[in-house]
Amino acid sequence: EGEISSISRFSLIALPILLVLSVTGGYLIAKKMLRPIQEISEAASHIEKGGDLKKRIEIGNGKDELHQLANSFNEMFKRLDESFETERRSTSDASHELRTPMAVIMAQCEFILEKDRSPEEYKKALTVINRQSKRMTVLINDMLDYTRMEMKADSYERQPLDLSQLVRSVCDDMALIRDKGIILSYDAGDSIQYCANRYLLTRMLGNLISNAYKYGKENGHILVLLERKNDEILLHVEDDGIGISSEDLPHIFDRFYRADNSRSGKGTGLGLSMVKQIASFHGADIEVESTPGKGSRFTIRFAFTEEKDSR
Ligand code: ADP
Picture: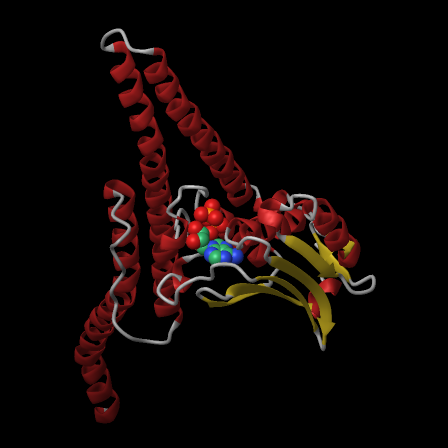
């Protein structure tokens, strides 16, 4: 009986203590567990209010679900930040590119309207205005095409295509350009099939060939080759023109980038960024080899297995 009463006395004292301990313990554990969630929600609302996409959720290292969640959020913030940054940069690049011809046009207009000018002066000013307006038109068209492609990448469908036939028809047309006496020849293989978008591929090949003409030398050559090699389809566009220096090579696919070799102002610097965009739409890689003074060779590598995953 004494034992029972000592047990019940013990319980009377110990139970409340245990209860308090477990409640406090539970509270602390819950608080510790909820802290990362609080961090996540604070970071999200901070970003929502201030738009500061540089902020990251910091809850230390760990491998549990909450850390994974925080990492996914951070990854998302990073991606958003990068895409806003690209957007900001391209708007500012685009305005910068348009500002130059616009400034020239305005200066010419002001100059001729200042006082009476001779017919030669009018003619000279109008020639400049004409040239700059054409440049602006090309620029605007290229920018629109580029943006359209960027925004509507999903709306381009891929279908099984006879690439050999596509290459043949683009080359046959473009061989007629014969700019600077340059001769275009090609070998398009034999009905090489691939699942692709006809419009985009035509555009890509067109851009590469236009560049080969633009940066080609008098009486030079352009060679277009389509071949199947192991589990890849390779499309080469090769020229024996002015080539690209090793300093420029890493940048030629950047938007608006023009190497020193093309300061004559012929291009917009958008052609190759479009080529890159189209290649990546098809899951293809691009390679360039170039020797200044000797020529360049652009290669697009399509993974042949891609053919099966028609979209
Ligand atoms: P652009 O409108 O100036 O031609 P691109 O984006 O097509 O713009 O090309 C970027 C730059 O890369 C060009 O300004 C030129 O300097 C260089 N480039 C492109 N293709 C060739 C080539 N086949 N040979 C030599 N340089 C080239």
